[in-house]
Amino acid sequence: MDQEDATCPVREYAERVLSGDIPAAEPVRLACQRHLDNLRDSELNVSTFEYYYDELAAEHALEFFGYLRHSKGKWARQSFELQLWQQFIIGSIFGWLHKKTQLRRFRTVYEEIPRKNGKSTKVSGIGLYLTVADEEYGAEVYAAATKKDQAKITFDEAARMVKASPDLMQKFRVYKNNLHVIDTGSKFEPLGADSDSQDGLNVHGGLIDEYHAHKTSAMYDVIESGTSAREQPLIYVITTAGINQNGPCYQLREYAMKVLKGTQPDETFFAYIATIDDDDDVFDPATWMKANPNLGVSKALDYMVKQANKAKQMATAYVNFLIKDLNKWTNAAVKWIPLSKWDASAGNIVLEELKGRKCYGGLDLSTKLDITAFALVFPPDHSDGEYIVLVFFWIPEDAVLEKEGKDKVLYTNWVDEDLVYTTPGNAIDYRFIRKTINDLGRMYKIEEIAFDPWRATQTALELADDGFTMVEMSQTLKNLSEATQEFEKLAVSKRLIHGGNPVLRWMVDNTVVRMDENENVAPSKKKSSGRIDGVAATINALARCIVHEDKTSIYEKRGPRSL
Image 1 (cartoon, one colour):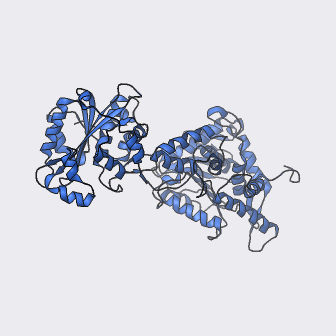
Image 2 (image 1 turned 90 degrees about the vertical axis):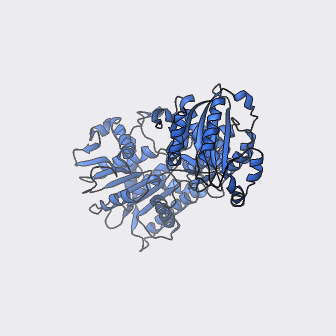
Image 3 (image 1 turned 60 degrees about the vertical axis):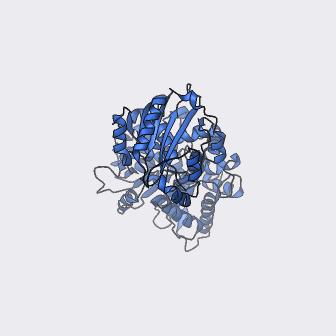
């Protein structure tokens, strides 16, 4: 590159971001300002600043990506073309050197970027560069994750890129879990917390993908402790945002923000966090580029529009949109279905028309002092039809007034209107529930009844003796996620007909859903603002309905155990 004729892409990106030509939120603007401030300090030879920017070193790393080939999709076999924002990151990492030692300045990188922005491809390329082009003999580079299978995602992408590049195939030997450079004795391997051994690592490069999913810093600590014998090791953490704001990823993010703001001095730490600003309209396409610098390249605008439209309709989709597409950390607990959407799905239920129809049951047995719920879900006759829900509730007769004061609802009125049934005494008598279910079984064709085995085993055995097919439904996020999402989708699309049952309406309004890092969701009894037993029973029933009515369901493959 003729330095007099060419513009340094790293400087160009920084200047365009700060001028407003390229949309960016505060963290990226801070990273760009830091780069330009550092260039000024280096050029002025400020005595306290020990680094300089070497455009040739940056160019060496950037040009390496020209040897890489995409391995998937419409770009398969084509050369990897770095976008300007990617050149800023890679050029910064490899271009800044120490004035005296000539060694690399940055030893730790924290990059936070939404999905579909070329994350895996870029980090795989960096791993290959550290293995074969960094002039490090015996380099050990690891793609690290909590599980080896997860670590192999980055490693396998790197292996495919090697196989797709004639130039790299001359340098590498490709094995199942190893990329080896004969000339230098260097290697690139996947490493999981469940690997046979993590001892004796001599880490030149550690690539930690999706750090938000790590519950502890154990893997990061293993990588970091293995770098002590290297002169210029690099730990590269790359992730999307997440929900665990008490975990190691968010702690590292907070550290990164302090570095960018200048309140935490650390010249060896580089951070690039693509997100939107707090006051941005999340549904305004003009702001999406801030969080998605590859919008229009690897991430389609149509995809963002589709995700935004889903987010406008469903609370869980909204949270996923914030986290995965706009890179905003959010709380795991989310207020669920707005009452306006729930009420719009009420419809009209004609009980006489349901007689003899096929349905699926869901049982949520409470403690003997609380509400117990039983739900029936009637599937539609065709794929776009309506699901009909009937829910039955029981409460101990002597506890009605006490529960009114505690739950702040008029159980007395609901009992008078036959919306809640009482059982004699101060505790639920499960014999009454069993009798009602048997009565319902004579009216409707109940295919299966799903139940939480924690409290209901004895009642379930008795109902099994009565001839019902009883299916255990452990109340885990993974078990309930598909049915929870289907419940929400059907309700907001006005296809979950519930007849406006006021008890169920109150419980829906109480419901808060929890989610995990794998986007599994389910109602949270602990975090919800009141009773949600009817919602839990309905989700149990819907889960079994999905198994039999939708043959592509994940439940079809997993199948909870029948009694």
